[in-house]
Length: 143
Ligand SMILES: [Zn+2]
Image (tube, rainbow, N blue to C red; front, side, top):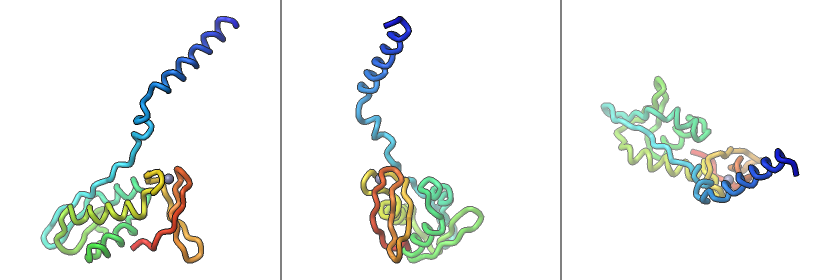
């Protein structure tokens, strides 16, 4: 073996050693963090200021989220100047509890817990397919 090749080999070996030394935790570190919706009560209404941003993180149409939350909170929501307005006074806790359920039921893959999922239809049945691990499961209609 000439010198160059030898060094290359050692480097690969070293790299392999390094990878092995990384504790397993690092691989699962990328775990999904549940986004928190920011809410504020204004008069008799509740404003959610970051729903549009959050919808991008979870790859969902904000309209779907608003529809779901509106139904669950018994308070229809509308988009006004980048904010979502719900009728009635809703606490952050109420809104986020429902939102968390939406994310758990309609966004996160039940296999790998990642949010890289897509909603797709096959005939009358709606499925959620995970782009990360390929898992697919039927879901009831959103909202
Ligand atoms: Zn998955």
